[in-house]
Every structure is written in structure tokens, then in C-alpha cells.
Image (cartoon, rainbow, N blue to C red; front, side, top):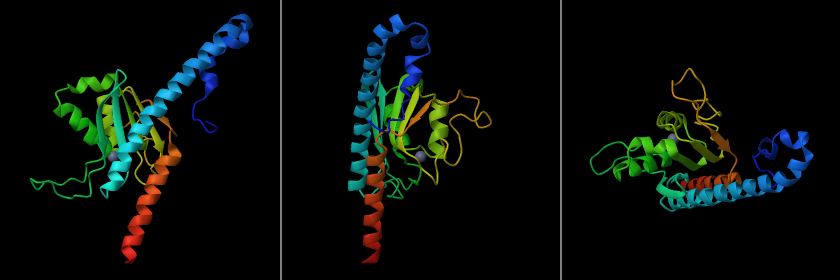
Length: 200
Ligand SMILES: [Zn+2]
């Protein structure tokens, strides 16, 4: 991956410079661990992209999310905000992909503490609302694709993920730039279609 957001150097560490013999042995191992991790992340991001595609097919803004616990997806979500009211007449404006996935997991019987051992993969930077929820639930890691320049809560508009003024919870570990191009393509496709239908 030419534009990988990973900084390989951080995993290889300063020891490799101090101890060349050891480095010669550990470098391939470190590389292969890094490759394995990249492959895993790419796999979960593909699953999140599939959820974004499902949102697109349902005329929702194409954002998708999966939550992974012990190498298993335990929840999936996609945006469900366009249907303004659900059957009971409640507003659905907050039904973002991340919150949909979280609610499904809680509804299936997990305690909220499970999220402390979960990684969340979402195609677009979590908004301010979702970033706050993810931090309070103390997700282990959050991986996202493209940035959300209008509403992003992980650095774009506000830095809910790590600003101590916003929360007493520990900072959220975020990793961005995974499957960025695909995430942007879905959004572009969606807005092009919206524009086309508006002109008719
Ligand atoms: Zn959100």
C-alpha cells in the first residue's frame, strides 16, 4: 500500500539500530507481523465498506461500520437516518452506522463493558456525537477511512477523541486512512445520484 498510514518505523523500534545482529533476525518477523496486521485491518474495512454499500442501496448516506471482538464481527451497522420516523414515531436522526452497530450488540445481550475489548472499523471519520459515544464506551481502537470535514469528531471539526476538556475517559486510539479511496467513492456516487435525481 503506497500511501499506508502506518509508520513501519514505529514498530521496528530503535533497537534495530543499536543491535544489528538482533535486528537482522527480528526485522523479518516484525515485517510479517505488520503485514498480518495490515491484512486484518483491510479485511475488516472491506466488511465496513459492504455495510456502506448496503446504505447506498437503501438511499442512505453510505457509511458502514463493523465492531470486532476477538477476531469476530459482533455487530454491523450502516446509516439509517433518512427514514425520519420509525414505527413508534421517534426521530431517527441519530441513527449513524456506529450507534446502530452498538445498539444491536447491546440488544443481543452483551454488556457495555465488551466494547473495551473491541475495535471499531468505520468508513468515515466518526462525527462529534459518535466520537463522544465511542470514547465513553472506551473502544480499544477506532479505524476509519476518510475524514468528515463537516462533522468529524476525531480531528476534523473537534478532537473529541483525545481532548481532555471533553471527557474524563481515556483518549480514544484512532487510526485513519484505511480504504479511504473506496469510502470517498461511495460518498461521491451517492451525492452524484442525489444531484441527478434533484434535476429531474
Ligand atoms: Zn455519527
